[in-house]
Image (cartoon, rainbow, N blue to C red; front, side, top):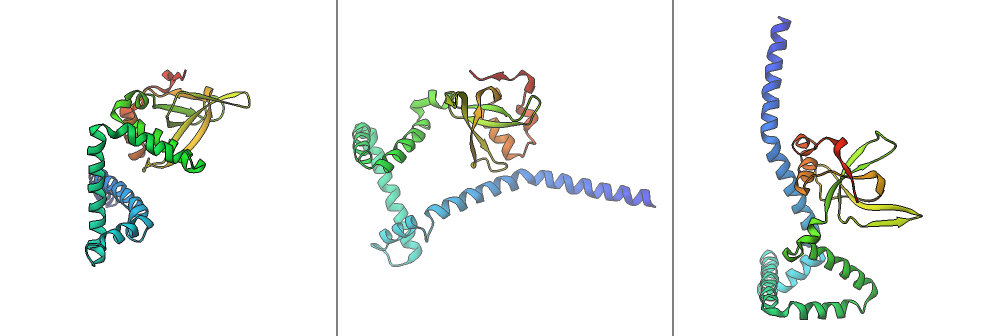
Length: 225
């Protein structure tokens, strides 16, 4: 009797696990999309400074709150599209010189603008060399045989601090790798993982489930130059 019940329970558990694994990819995808949507809403949604500004813009055309917010967004998107046409017609350098001249007059704003400009340039299709400079690395903590963490190294450039060389790495969070920590690791503790950025993201989003698809033998990792 007990063996029969155990067999039934195992079958039921197996069916439940199979169903869970079947829907898990969809659940994780939906969860990440909801997280990103919530993050964007907190930045530019209704009730925020940006949202209120868009709504005020829309009130010039309609009186309904929701319609005003939508129209405000429509006006901004059309303006961005028009700016894109203007840039493609050859005004990119002129606009960059104008923005650089204005931003450089304010010390704090100038620093933020300079950093933002570098980040945006990394995603420009004409700056593929900078994107290729980003690599996936292993970061080893402790003595030999210590814990290893997969991280993203934005630049191979080393930084000398107190007579020791360090690399800047970004350690993502799982299962939402859009956040994480910026850590300066001793260069001798950083090794190439020989993996694509897509592979890194897949491992973190799947909480390690897809690791066998992307990981080679850690012992074959090579130290960064």
